[in-house]
Length: 217
Ligand SMILES: Cc1cc2nc3c(=O)[nH]c(=O)nc-3n(C[C@H](O)[C@H](O)[C@H](O)COP(=O)(O)O)c2cc1C
Image (cartoon, rainbow, N blue to C red; front, top):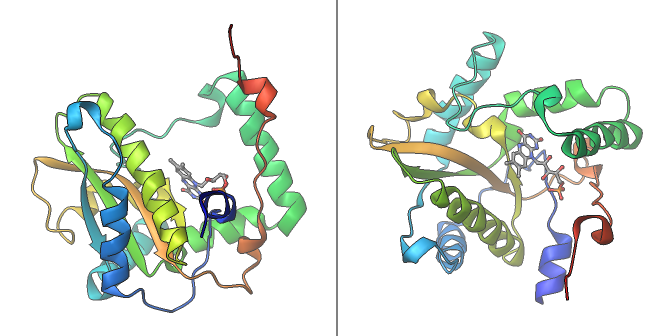
């Protein structure tokens, strides 16, 4: 696939088919993502991918935590919508409205149920950073995330970056066999899209480029 096709065909998929991803494909995706730049080539990101029984354990535990309304333990704290700046708030509210328009009034419930089941992702890529990481490592992790999703797209694998995957970060430590010197910052679900899922019909718009760009002479 050429670059424009890869970038333009990636979108968040919120329900995956029951179809495993080959281990070699996962390895290739991560190897490509490793080409991203990082601060002084520090390469702070570590990757743990949960599949099979490990993922089944995590999924079960996640569902239980959702049912129990357990508090979020994400490393990067959840920011309530009223606390975002006006520009971001307008985009968030616009996304809620357009999602409702596209898939119906029930969108929130549908999304909640899918999230409780970790979107039926067939592999979840957990990105970790050392416990006392400098803020710059978050820039590196963001770059790594996008490169990984584009590499997946290029390999015909769909993706979803989601807070939901790392909402109960403490519960992930044991199943992911992580030691206390690492923190699970972000999760990316991978799989093959279920074409029949209404959730996969969501299309997210973007602001006009002129409204976010200033080129100074
Ligand atoms: C850091 C981050 C966290 C996200 N968390 C969630 C999530 O928990 N649940 C979800 O359904 N989508 C989540 N998303 C997906 C966004 O809603 C999506 O990227 C955005 O609406 C743009 O749509 P697109 O990815 O299809 O282009 C997240 C995206 C990012 C980058």
